Length: 87
Image (cartoon, rainbow, N blue to C red; front, top):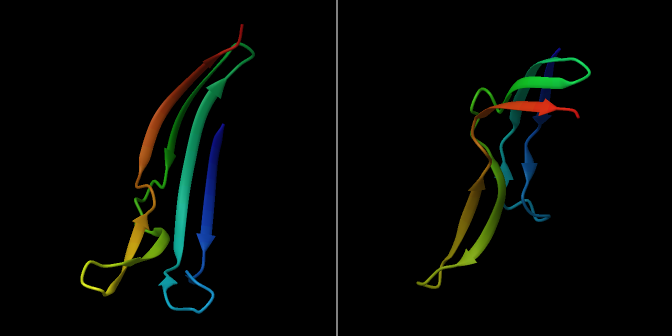
């Protein structure tokens, strides 16, 4: 089988006061597998187009008295192979 997941998120704000905005993002995951009653072998990829996106931000005090915003990035592309055997 072949499976594709598409996750879209429009622009949104990090805080209720609308001080910081996250951009929109579209993430695409795919999985291709062969299987029967005993086993499954699957090749998969997450965020296959390697979109860069922010998952959260934090407002931090700086050493000089100024505040700074720390942005935490989402995962980049990941690929793998999974094998399952049923006893």
